[in-house]
Length: 305
Image 1 (cartoon, one colour):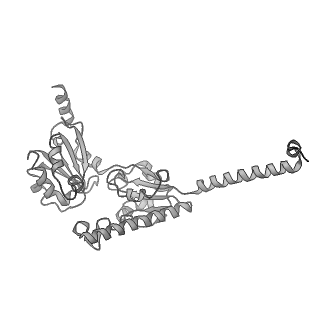
Image 2 (cartoon, one colour):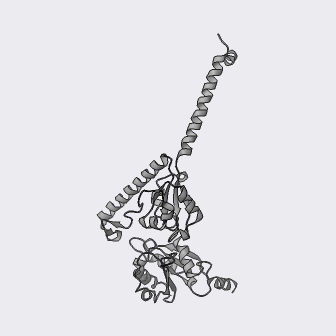
Image 3 (cartoon, helix red, strand yellow):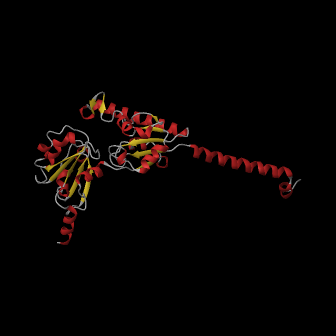
């Protein structure tokens, strides 16, 4: 009978050990190669308007991408950087309409059907992205503004594990709006905090004004996204809890050099001030004392008094 030590010293044993070692190395190398060959998934914040507000990192990630998802408008504004890329369509299709109706006009059954259709559509986008990644291609979604604030891309991001996606931050509408106003949202006088929201998120569904009553107890800068269509009802509700001379500004097309426009007023005057404006979507409403005078110097005076 052969002993263990003699077996290890034998030629056949060494051959067997070398074969096992080679197989182990091959398996590890092959697994690493598969992982390395898998494409990347970027969600890129493109900022408002065009390339002039996109970050260097955003442009570099577009260059690395093989496949792009973006809106038709975005593809036009960034056409220079999308040459040679495969464009797979608009990932926000049906975001605000269902069968040519505004989402807000839908009945209960239609809302449910709309929700199911949208989720199914987003799931299909996730499957497409994963398929492209598996074939070794880098995929990017071009999201306007900053994906972290009212970024619709998160409906797709949630179909991935955290380590499968890289989010590239961008210049948001709020930052572009405050730049147009040339004011500090905070520090500003005795302002306690800044609120970024939309009318339908703040008031809830069905609407409840209790939150406005509570907020009115504190000095605050309010920034409303997606508010132009609801400006009449929003201002009417704010006037119940705030003084009519509280400053208000509406910034249209923030960040678009050729279209940007600022209209300033108060809760008592702003609806008349914007009555003639035709833009009903691309705009932000800012409410707060930060809009008047010298807010940062006013903050210092408030602290030392």
